[in-house]
Length: 398
Ligand code: SF4
Image (cartoon, rainbow, N blue to C red):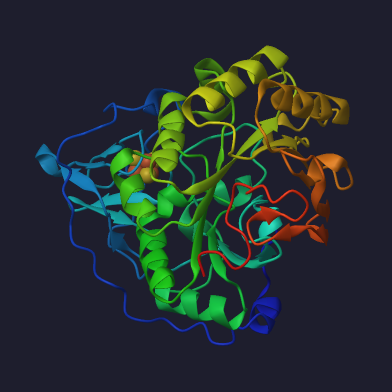
């Protein structure tokens, strides 16, 4: 992930970082709860006691979904942690605070990373190949992955990182100026800036842009259903198909993530799955087999699965990179189990980057890194045998 510098952002069409009026949210109290309350705050770090600013700042925005509790406490309803904050406290994701009994997000309109990415980088291989995604992130994450690639922003508080001022209308305008067809909420965890994401996504949908959500999937059903109304595609990280490993490696529970996949599937949203193969944590072939069995049973064979190569980073900087042979083995294994489109990522040149028709096995899309070199699709079909390939392709859904 690259942070854009000011000069490059200007060249990308961001000449004037203009603020605009913030769309108003209706306060949406929680009624009925589909997810387990209490969450996993015990395993995921902590509430930052007494760490909130005294007053809301310019980029504060009232929380989208929360409960007011006795003694001016509040409970956020966006993700399964369900942070309970007393006045003056800051959330587990570092982005939300309780000021005088009101839950505020502090990341509304202040992204810290902006870039124009090829969609293949997300990775999304079956959604509008060869297109550009206007990609942005604020600080904050509701996980604590030991191997986080973007910990400088994901584990930071909003005021600790240089940021831009870009409210939703400005984001949509910049995306169009950059000739992107989508806006991607990515790099850190968009669940934690839900208020900002949903307002951008609604405007983007109105103006004919697609919305892409790149996420750990740790979100409650109610906000996810709201997001699904304007979501076009997602890549959700199935970090470890084991609750114990998820808690240890990522600081979250497995079941809420599985529920996210089920909801996206039920709603007919195009999504792809990512599994980062961290040596010593998630490089067990039996785990891969169990994960594939669950995918086939609950989601079917058509959602693409990406095995990504791990590189040493953050708290796991002493581990070696994933051996390429492990990724090749896992790809073969998942295909033998019945998943039709399985890829390897972070290996620049390998057939695991390419798409082959699941029927005739011929090469449909050849990729070198993020670059598409060969394209053998006709609309949504294999050019050779006319089989419909799962995904959303060029010319579809525009
Ligand atoms: S989104 Fe942030 S504040 Fe809300 S429950 Fe999750 S970690 Fe807590």
